[in-house]
Length: 161
Image (cartoon, rainbow, N blue to C red; front, side):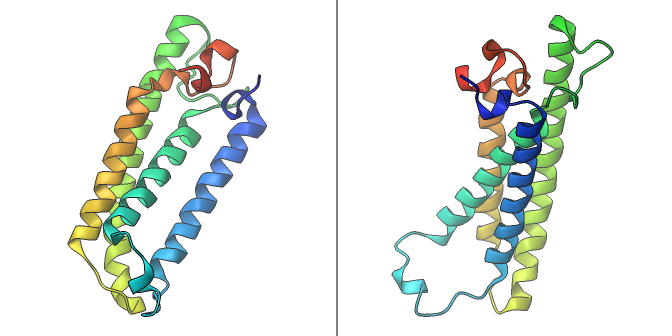
């Protein structure tokens, strides 16, 4: 059975496109003023929405930057094979996850600041929820052993973790 993570180059490209599309949609949704009649009908805290939005962004983004197709390796090293290649990919993936976590936290701050210009409120607690989503997503990815975020044999697939 082929999972998205073992689908090769096309799967890796699809994941990256999905990640960037989600991020663009998230930007638009976070900057569209919410009509007053909709606010009371939401029976969930906006902090939960912020947390989940950035959790999904972090997880999809983490998988997208760590998975590789047959020709585009992350931390592939000179050979890209064997234990040394796997260790190199795992280190590279952990570094990418840390880098992107920082990018998401900075983006969340800018995102909150920009909301004041589209008739929404800037909230430090919303940013805290965003950061909590990023931290949780990053930790989840790290616990799933990023060495498995690569295409190859079925044993290496994240689907079998």
